[in-house]
Length: 484
Image (cartoon, rainbow, N blue to C red; front, side, top):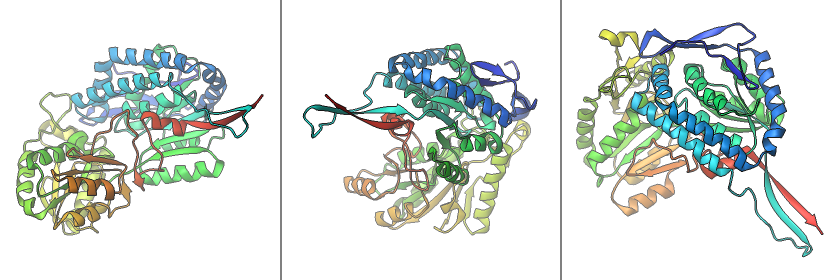
């Protein structure tokens, strides 16, 4: 694949940053391989993008929803033609396996088509008036210019599930990709460019979060910010946006539990735990992190889990026989290793893994063994803090009441699952668990594009993304009263 320098996309043109600086994207599976180069922009570049988006917003909102949808359909068709190319870039840039990258890119295409269809759906209701000679109804208006700040772990799906609804509901967009996936994001924006989007409707500005991200949050002409990332950054964004009256949407961390009841299908639960905890190298906000098992089956579950984990093949995600790729960056690898060390220091028992893989060709990348601990108590780092890596904490409990209480005993509330055949357990879990995504006999990871997604407690700003729920953030309600 050609190694090239990707420019910012502003007002329908590919433009180099006025800073004159670029940064290099390396393959986390092989640090000797350059994926591409991207711009290190400054506030002048952001101002140019905001100006173009602000000037374009009236013309874009004045198009019919169907016309805006036609543009999204075109992008989807172009992305479908380039699916393999974009997926390979994703694997090379952030490390997930090629099969996962293809699945994510296909999901991005489906997101575009779903929201293209939203352009033909209703945006309001007729409301009875107390005045019999009046007509009263509600409609929805776009916010204006939207700043999109996605994470690096889903470099196609998350930018699209934020940008596509923003666009279909009549907003213009400025995308600030994560540095770890800037090249993949640029390839997605190339599809928008090829589709002939009007100048200024979608813009992309690469650079540091402390410069471009913060600049977006503070900019007076950006009416909405949608962010996915860490709690620390998310709370800062919320405070700044609130202070200037901008609308904000935050999707943040998770410490997702899976409960395995005594009557569970153990093999099914083991497979789901491994998939939920180790796919994408555990780098999902919905990844399984805590495995809470009823004591009667704990030993049997543990042995099967360890046996299955031993079969995982770690390596470069471009190889067909590799099941788990590297951590996305050296920084992320070091963060996970530090959490593992903390777990050992705090007294948890390391059952398997825990070390960097650096034999042979693996020494060129940021590879880590799939890791499982037991003897984890509720106040340990492994039980409380998001790790964002291939690390599972096994916890034995006496009964279902204790399992649910423990599952809820964290600051997060994003995703949770249970494995059981007992309808009583299922209903109790659904009712009592503090999580925005509840899954029964299925892994914690997994979000369907047509359904609302978001967390409780410290996992979100209590808004929801995806599905028809997306209209709530990207629009404002206007109530209309017409007197004859």
